[in-house]
Image (cartoon, rainbow over all chains, first blue to last red; front, side, top):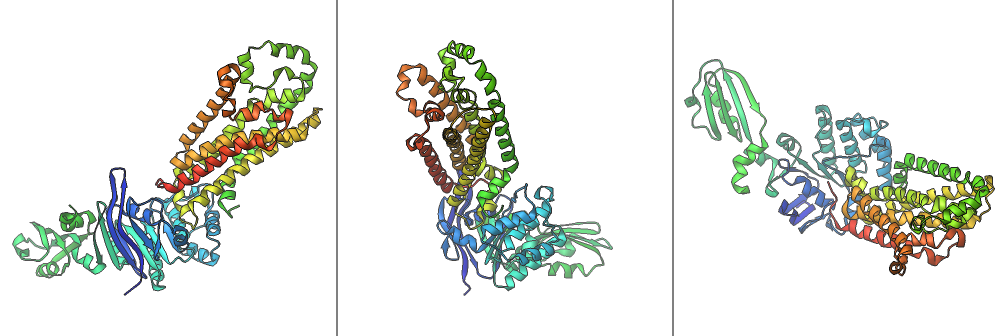
Length: 298
Length: 268
């Protein structure tokens, strides 16, 4: 049984009468990459900011490393790295100044690691923050989160604004951190990203944790829209009796349908005909929710 | 400059600080330079001032205007009655109100508090930044006065100049702390400036009223301006008891700020 790093019990946050999150019970194990998945406004940032003690729970509690987030937050923060979802940096400083400042507040960090991270993300530390693109600001945010080799990383939408190459670099970094046995909690509204880098996923919708699953289970529930182009005319009847297929429409040489889980059956059936093109749209999170968790959430 | 929050906060405001200090030096010298010519026309000036309505005299912060030709009377009327308090209040209120709330409004508080620092420590370090900045401004003002008095042949005690510089600093600092505490409680910089301005304006007006209205006289000590103007530190000097009201306001505001900031959600 792995050690539990983050625990929330009945964690609830209301902003006046508006619900942030409701009765959240979450456990994140040491050494895992935990994806916190949900559409915008679902309560991901609210949860994360409660873990950081930036906002206080209406009821319930949370602990990190077995320490209470409300009474031992300073001790906790020594051991975590945080990237805010809405990253704002000091505009009047250079990246290097900013890192020096935060390093000093942490009582010093290994500067080689800072340089390594800057190198990896191809980030120029000398530039003033106010001249940085949002992607570069994000890199600076990542550097300050990783620079002290924290035991737990809490990253709110970490890949937003990163170009694809840098996203790959970020994914590699996550894998390295995981290999070292450190723990990562990252939030995302991007299902493929979470499938790719996470071990377990907690799905949050409308302030409630709907399910916590292994990524493989989640994949089996993912909803994809598929479009197959054939060399000759096909009919809907050619594709009947397939598991997980819905909203199937055949128009001339094109078949469109929605597939839940494995594509195997559909692909094998399609192989009876001459396939010209196969277009798979990325699983849509909102659709996945509506199709599979809608009933639960209500 | 990035060793702690205090130094970093002062560094953030370094251009503003430099200009404020230059402004104070310029203000002091331009006023002190007038003194030799005022001294020559002392008699007609005293007569003119004596004929001013009491209400107008009261607005000069209760300084003894008949004494305008003496160094003490001159500096009180021209600088310490109105100009210097207003300047210190504007400076300290702007600085104080944005110390916590400004960082929150800019959205940088999340990252700052992700570091292993208690909120109390953040408030205290920001408080120290305000204290050091307003003290620096007071020191530069005092130094300008001492040098200016030498140059323009004004005979005045450097110790008493220090006393009035201190009450000026404490007066501004006190109202600045009201803005500071409001910012800590609400996270709103504009509200901090507004609340501090209302307190400062109310305090100033009450001080003027207390000189004109008999019934208000007993309560004149409620206005902080009383401890700067009516005590007349430039003439009488000060002892510790005179600065207690300032220190009390500053201390209460700091405690309110610490508790207020510690209890609430940080704005996102």
